[in-house]
Structure formats: structure tokens, C-alpha cells
Image (cartoon, rainbow, N blue to C red):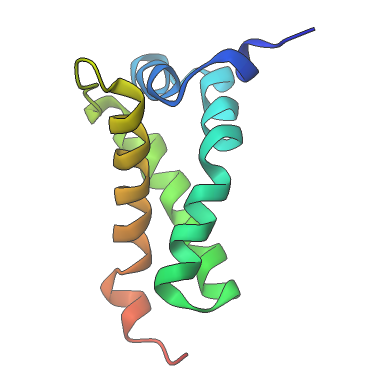
Amino acid sequence: MVTMCETMTTSEALLLLGQRRDPTAWAALIEREGTGIRRTCLRILGDADLAEDACQETLLHLRELAGQFRPQAGAAEAGARAWVLRVAAHAAAGPDRRSRPR
């Protein structure tokens, strides 16, 4: 049996999360984008522990910022993924992480 979490796109998950903090949307977002978020943070930071912290911070930011996401006509899914990874990159490159020794 296919669950709604498995069929929800990143764009749909962000919209539902922004509109009503839907727990299924939250689970779908983590399932679909969690690995990409971790990879982005690790690529920027080069340290697994710092990357995990940045990943957690990204997820918290996404929960708060989801209402600001606006899908692009014709490219909603690509735009959603780029938006999520941009939030991750900002979290990883934040001033509090850049000043830490590696």
C-alpha cells in the first residue's frame, strides 16, 4: 500500500507544511529531501558532526519558512528542491559555523 507521504512531491509538502503544518507533509519533506540536505551540509562543512547540526537547523528553518515558498510555474518540483537546498546551504555556511575550527 502506497502512503500519501510516498506520493507527495517536495513542492506539495512545502505548501501543506506552510499552510497548516501538516505532519504528513513534514514526513514527506524529510523522506524526500533529507539525504540531499545532509549531503549539501557535509559538502560545505567537511565535518560530519557540524553537518548534522546544520541539517537539523535546516529542518527547523524549513518548518518556519515553508509558508514563504512559492512554486514556479512549469518547474515547481525543481524549484522546490533548489529552494530546500538553498536553505541548507545558508544554514551550513552561517557565521556561527564558519568561525568554528575544523
